[in-house]
Length: 247
Image (cartoon, rainbow, N blue to C red; front, top):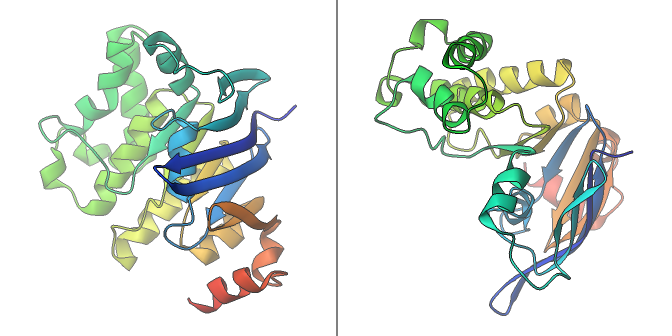
């Protein structure tokens, strides 16, 4: 059974149709990359999955449980939202670290608030995660003392601290220069090697090709083409071919 099923997701902002019926599944341990031009609906899709936006239609199913149903004409309660969001971790484009907190405090804050173990267990897990992203020597530094790449690696550790079933990345390298991009992609690849289930919205085509099991190409709110990374070598649609030629 798929860990995630997305069925017929539609989302409008006013009269603008942003998502026009998105369907896909995700298997446990799979890395799915989502590519497409700006404005194609990629970020809105991630935000719907993470309950930061609410789809107007369609279903989101995790481990066989419907966590969102657009046909039910009500928003989830706060308790339902908290529960639903625990399935997903989200790493944003612009890090979104708390500037007043150290690296360690950024990583431990949410688990402490949600009582995800004793204080000692939470701190021990956080220290291991911070070391795993190569920042053992920055544990007590503040975000302003870190490079963009280091801040993004802290954001990854923070997302992992909540032990999500599915880790989502929204163009995690778009705010970074090429040198810092490499260090962040290396961390994401190491998670893929450990079979972390991930959805990665990215403009890094070589990364998508090398790390993904499957790629979705979105265009104008629909999935225009999807398949193995081979679709990047032999695109079947004119739109994907045109998109790849822009790089």
